[in-house]
Length: 284
Ligand code: NAD
Image 1 (cartoon, rainbow, N blue to C red):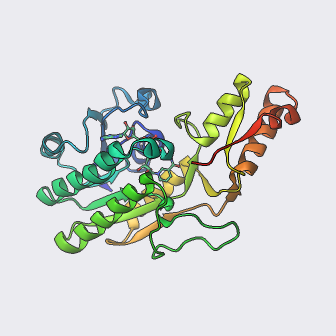
Image 2 (tube, rainbow, N blue to C red):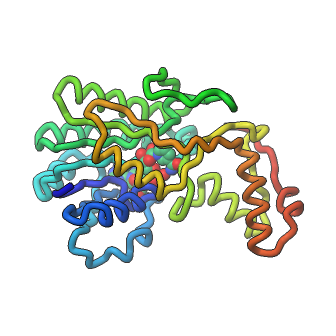
């Protein structure tokens, strides 16, 4: 692939891995990283790219129409990959407004910019949470499964998907949608399950698990997700949806117990002492 890839939210967790992956995979591409630098952004994630001629960081809000328009005029991207989002379910339950603004209005702003400045691909990064809860052992949701989001976060992601598909149909915007499952790996903000447990375990604090911890999640290593997203960008069919999943389903409690074993082995602690700090807290 050649040309300019506009990556939004590239200072966040998955976006930062994708920026690095893209620069390595497509030597003739440059990456413009458009990020608002919210609390979830960490410039350190890509600090080593400073001075890299094929990489530019632009501080910009995807919901700011004029600013986005300027970016499209200045950089004329051929490809758009939209990672930018408010992404923490708990925060969406406390206040959904920033989620509606960034995840829905922001996606709309990008789609409008892509209407005015045609692109070869518009890859929307969605989530498997748009399918709702899947019971343990049930077959994974297919891409055409009904959307049953159960949090304000996943509802805004589902809304963005539907807008993208409508823009593909109505205005022939070359939209492709990727729906990754839960990612884990370096650079994740420590409010999310795995980094939070690691932090609390090392700090001697309790390990809070929602309800009975029976909630099931499918987990993928973030570098593998970035690679799969690259594949979808390269080969995905316009108008299609692709689940990005590892088929590695685990109950939350099982994940936390596994972390206790790994951390105990790493620091020479007693795994049962770590496990004794697991506490059930009211489910959100
Ligand atoms: P993150 O919260 O770590 O990072 C989000 C990034 O987007 C940050 O750098 C932030 O500054 C930026 N951002 C937020 N609002 C913005 C705005 N209005 N304008 C421009 N930039 C803005 O997110 P993440 O966990 O890396 O998730 C990235 C994408 O992948 C999201 O769309 C999320 O819904 C999706 N996703 C994440 C997971 C996961 O396990 N983390 C799983 C499935 C899907």
